[in-house]
Image 1 (cartoon, rainbow, N blue to C red):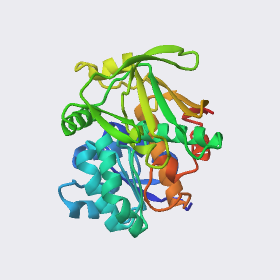
Image 2 (image 1 turned 45 degrees about the vertical axis):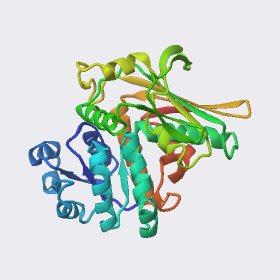
Image 3 (image 1 turned 60 degrees about the vertical axis):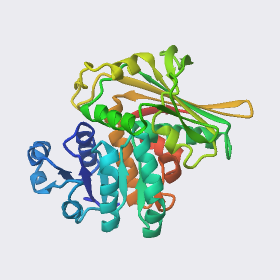
Image 4 (image 1 turned 45 degrees about the horizontal axis):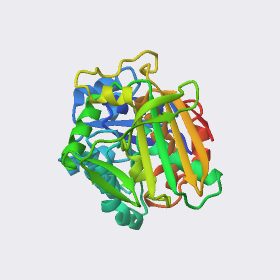
Length: 345
């Protein structure tokens, strides 16, 4: 890959957007800082030579402003939620520019919309669109994919992804996205069973999950559905995809007064740690893949930037809308994240 590739970051001044900008710079990319608030974008640019010249103000309500903002970019990463509002306009702009699109959307409905609305169009245009290329949706999909492939299975009976978070201090963007999703599904919860999405009015089941040590057995909310129930079935023949969340983290998310994440190191990461435990079952046989790391928002940056790097280099399995596991060599991708995430399978 030639040096100095330019990547537009829509939502560059947001919490995750700042991590993505920093990761792009660390890898030798030239980020274009795109968003609605010029002052916040300039604050991100401060101290970086020439960065202020790459501040570009744009909004999803003004397509021409997006076209100007993405002019000259080799790719775009969308970090601005709620993605139910931003994904489609930014993808449209990426298609007009003929450049790949990656986002960090955790919203189930927004990701469904991306697959439904842009699958054929992106494929016909030869443009790669990778939604949910983040902690939720992307990492779980890669883990399930590598577990399935390492077992030599073409399909599986069940995929389970358990999130062991030490706690969850949600950003304002996470809260806004959750509100939009709840409104779209009429307050119901959603799960993926029998090969389809089911919207339900009953309470999610309470259960336990045996995480690898040192976390051990923890109480979890079962069917705490995240974007994995969209990404995994988009390319793997698995009729049951279930996700779980530690009770402590789910309680933090639900509480209205839980503070936003606070930085504890020079990278801006919070003290939050995580274990993501993916278990795939077929014919009574079980295969596992596990990831460990720090700060679910911070780790979304190397996931998204590694995806951008591979797409630009042509290391992607075809055009169109593709989840992480469908777009990339899952095992090789996970090994490339070793500085940020410890993975075993």
